[in-house]
Amino acid sequence: MRTKHRLQLREERRARDRIMAAYKLTYLNYKARGELVRFILAYAEVDYEDVRLVPEKWQELRPTTLYGILPTLEFDGKILSGNGTIARYLAEKFELAGKTPEENAEIYSMVDCIEDLWQHIAAMFREQDEAIKAERRKVFVEKYLPVPLMKLEKAAASNGTPQGWLYGSKVTYADLSVAVLLEMLAKNHPAILDSLPTLAKLKISVEQLPAIDKWIKSRPETPY
Image (cartoon, rainbow, N blue to C red):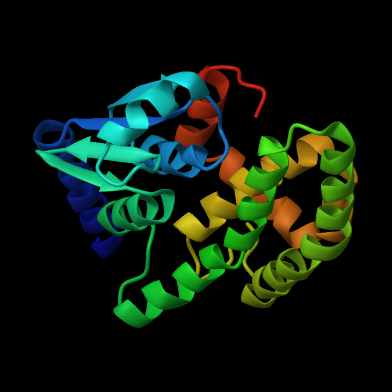
């Protein structure tokens, strides 16, 4: 009965959120960093305006934005900037975070574990010289990539859920964050999942969540 009551309260809360907050997400026309926020909104089944900019348009608009960074999330007269800030806010709001500040801190630490990887990915993406880009990719794959992923693999394996969740017994936004990164990495380095069996299971578990599966099948096709 308690579980049924919690589910009912959750659905009522989601219904209120749909009415009260009209979200506008602005990011580039890529998955990349913005896809975690899209995954969270998809999981919460919240309607939102998905504004996608080409890089040239973003550079034109950048001086007029609040802090000059993407993504931004606008709702109820407020503007949040930055992937980490937006993802954490939405995770807490839509029950993808912990129940206490301490649990939240542990989950956030798992998300921050891969933050450095995104910085290297962004640097490779911006590099115009193909020879330098190839060298950076080699260093990234051999030096930077293994350590955080093996740390998370160990954490997920130690947590011991059938789904491969990183923390606790249910999905959190840390799982969504890792799934987004693994999707991008596996596209160019399919063998990377061979040495990460628990994270590979996590990725599948996230992608099979009904709302996430629906989003993946309906989202725009982009190269990144």
